Image (cartoon, rainbow, N blue to C red; front, side, top):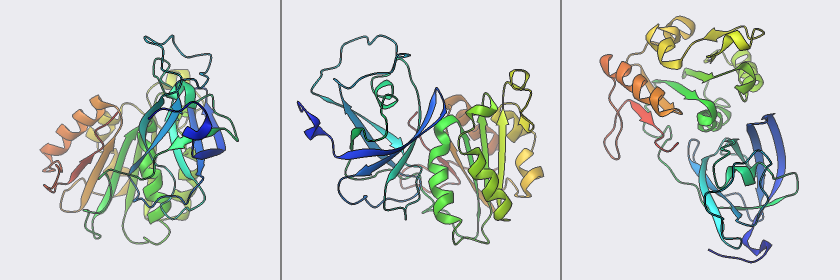
Length: 272
């Protein structure tokens, strides 16, 4: 798709929250009605090659065509019942084509949003009587925010657990919201963790790599939810090494991956 002006754009940025210089939450309002989606799915954002880039961006290997849309898929963080905007949680890839441009957006900026959502990283296949364990690093948290914002409004019995890892406490996006949810909803447990506590002495919480915490039994100890495929299903999104290692740990406990139409008890968001 090509365009020479803002005719390429069909949405407006109505919210921008900078978690830190490398992490941002964008709220985008489509000109048309917000498309229907299921919690856990992803949408598409796009900007023209002529769009400005943040100063921290690395030089592009090849110059982007100025009148061509650069498009990428990102998990949706907003509730599926939110009709005013679509929310995305983004990390700055300084060598990337799109995120250095997305990070330059401000309130009122125009942007392209795809007309529909896609993806099967949803709760559709999880039996309602099973607990849901949501494990993520970095912005892999985004689809879980959508799930929790949507499901915790009416799910009062099913147990939800979030184990979220980052380098520092200031990298833990949505931390305040998740801590509040954990206080208000007895069926929800939030387990934040950082890997560089020596550089963040004010963080008082769990430390260590996600895979190590899973192996040490943190989820069971803190939430009371057993890592048993008969009782819970696990979602993984984030760093590929974390995903690979946790899948191996879960396999020992009898969990099996879900593939296409083949049901399983481990659900993985593959793109990263």
